[in-house]
Image 1: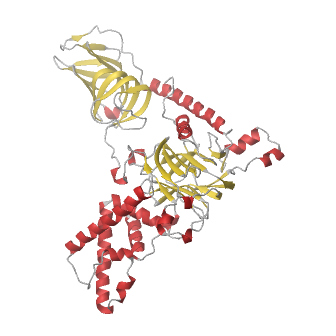
Image 2: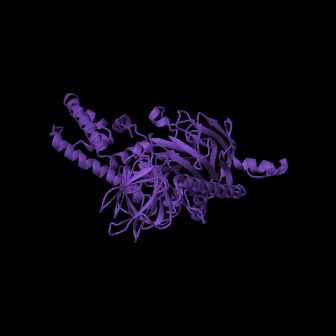
Image 3: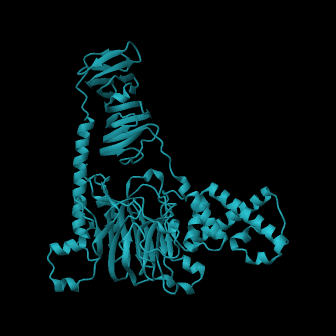
Length: 570
């Protein structure tokens, strides 16, 4: 939440005009952001001082019109000025009590179950980038005591690769391939320590002077590609191209040029007759292997999509799937499947209605999670959306997408919103604090109490942190009225479950005209903070089911569509 958004929300709260959804957002911001709490308290203090001054002129009439938020800061008895320190202390305690109570109701009162112990509980726990190298690829990699994924920073300290190959890109530009079994540490962008195992480095001109350290000495690059192997016999160095300096712990420095190899044993003795050449692939061959694996993963996903399109529960499956060109239509694979099988018109009419093709508005094509150009849609340009029509009434709902989020810079970041928000219509989006938001508007909402209305909104715990920026993730939400349960999923795992109260069960879900990644007919308010909801990110696959998928089915969607998941033969 930006400072301007925070100020607007606080002012609306003090004026008694803050919507229920905005109250939840403000609550979340104040619960995780100490600076926001300070601004909130200062604003209430100012409001209180103005109220006191006004009451001194107008009597007690003004006190009858104070909003609930103002009363939090108003003491019983005659109005009087208090010290700023005392007032802030009282306000801080009141604010903490207010939002702790509300937060406790949200977690306990609505019976939701947090299933994600490993997910940060608040947006303030976002991890900062710590490290000097990125894992750019791995093949058949087996890590000890952890599981690193492509795109992650290599943590500080000693890492143990038990088997397989990995490719690292250091911030200095050095490309490093390491073959397990190996132990190593990235100590800086210009220095790596190899305790045992094999490594091959390709060093650009900008990183001349790069050092690889072993227990027998250090190798200093002078513009090269070289390999190093560390085992029980010592350290072997081989120059594949260019020149290096070998600085043994004992004895003089040695210069090595293309084709030369030396072995430094554990006693520090240098041998000009080492064993066999060091067998470890280079960065170029590693990239070829990774590209082959990615093509195999893509083929696996395409086969799973072909099977998915046969599922009668599927209303819409949207994916460009490598289709080049400048078409502004996002195809629904279910419709295309019907056309390919030449369904007779009379039979086609007898089948249930499915979602329309999508109309792309403003969104720009980008690379998808498989690396194919023009195969995802970037919704960051203002006004971006995909317009779809989903006819009919539905007894249940599952929404799933593969999304790459740049940042959550809006109060509400749309995934799928119906036009307006009429009875029986779903809204699916991400709040600025990283929580999934799902609701279906119930009937007779005006007759409900405030607490009853709040129960129609189902929030996940925060799943977002800055380490996920620019990475492809799978989000899914299942609405199951028969089991009276809403389940949120992140990367195939259930992160929260929420009971649906009896008075909020909806079995006639209506979608109609809707937008992927925006809101086309906003209700309730017209200010940009509330209305502008286009996602700052990209989507390359979106699916709608008129049935609740099981946890195992959601897991299968993730595994078959995960571009990072190792193949069985990796």
